[in-house]
Image 1 (cartoon, rainbow, N blue to C red):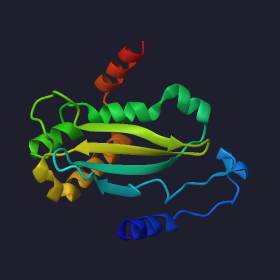
Image 2 (cartoon, rainbow, N blue to C red):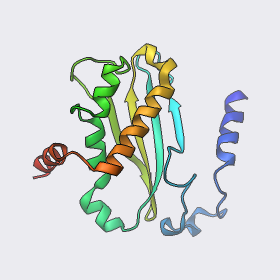
Image 3 (cartoon, rainbow, N blue to C red):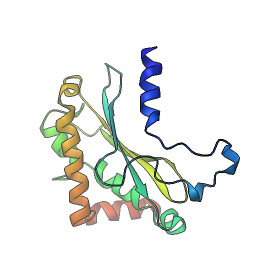
Image 4 (tube, rainbow, N blue to C red):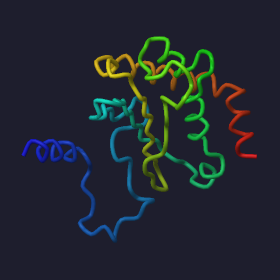
Length: 168
């Protein structure tokens, strides 16, 4: 009953569409929640061994073909997950929030979860040390700062070069 109530409350905010899904076109489905900007959803994973903070943004897509070819979110994901100086990974590790002090596996991953012709739901997941669960607000703030920095200054050139080398 408690889980059912939580699910019902969460989905109550999602706009209702036509009763017959066959009548819905991906091009006509609007943003599923909120406007692009601050993360529209944030949650902690339930794992006690490997906690993680997940943040999700609903982002509009203006040109699906250009987005598919250029993959701008893949470039942003690489920048967020890169252990470069002054980056998000370094900030998390310096504060003791990331699970590893050395680069063995990524502590920040990002991916497109779902999308339509008009929008994508993009998620950033930050692996945390067990004691980082209580500091999730600090982690969220660091992610938001990192995203804002990328918006202002762009992806560092060495990260873009690394991604280009993988693509080539």
